[in-house]
Length: 322
Image 1 (cartoon, rainbow, N blue to C red):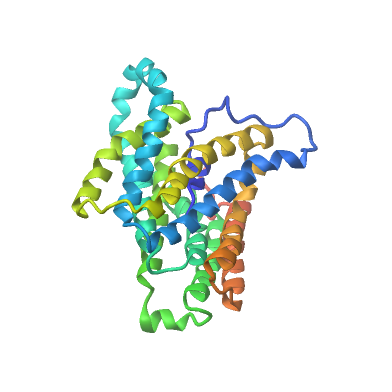
Image 2 (image 1 turned 90 degrees about the vertical axis):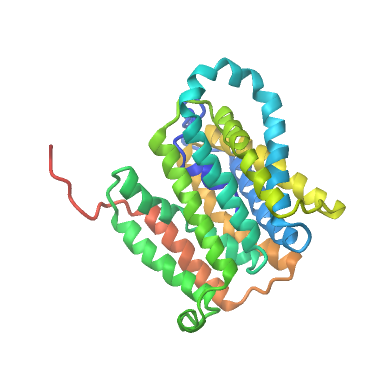
């Protein structure tokens, strides 16, 4: 999956960055920013799958964030130093966020790529907003909505059709594939990541926060790498690692923020539903993954459920007037 939900679910984006367009008609070219970010993250899902047979998950996990951390650290060293007193009380929270977003989510995704398809990974990742809504009801006191309930039921039904290859009853007989389970756990971790960002509302610039999250967990990723016996970095894997470390971790977030600035949050967020579509199309073309009827049915139901949960915001329960 992509890092799209890091930006989307967070309350981390500066209000100064989010600028609602003043004109009613938006130039279609403005969508290139947000769609470009989605496309980069979709390709990164394919990178995960390609890396599965080429490089150890511990190697790419550590190398990817080392590249991103060093690059961002060099650029934002001065802002971090100037804000050091503001940062210090939040180092624990930044570490927890880094563990969820950069360690647990990404390591599970790389492991999942060994035993599931890129198409499945993309569609499972699309459930993050639903998981985030569930965590939000618990951690943010956001009342569950009719859309969350109905959309969740629809998405889970679609997911059962997808993972059961058109026969959901198979899941009861055989259970889920290991990769699908790992990707579900990764999606849960990423949903919690986004909700905690919103709950904590750290008073830090987006780039400073992202840089610190990476730097605080690099020792953990190094330990993970060492625990796997310091597997080598095959020369053929370098382009994959560089793509994950620079376009997917640095360029795509910048494009996404630009998209938010020129389109506004509502229009930019609508492009997120292109993610599984891009992943399925690329996986079919370049990985030889077969796109069957159950992909279309299950995938459509899953995405429809996510959209329903976002659009139908009527609370399930009425709150007592203060």
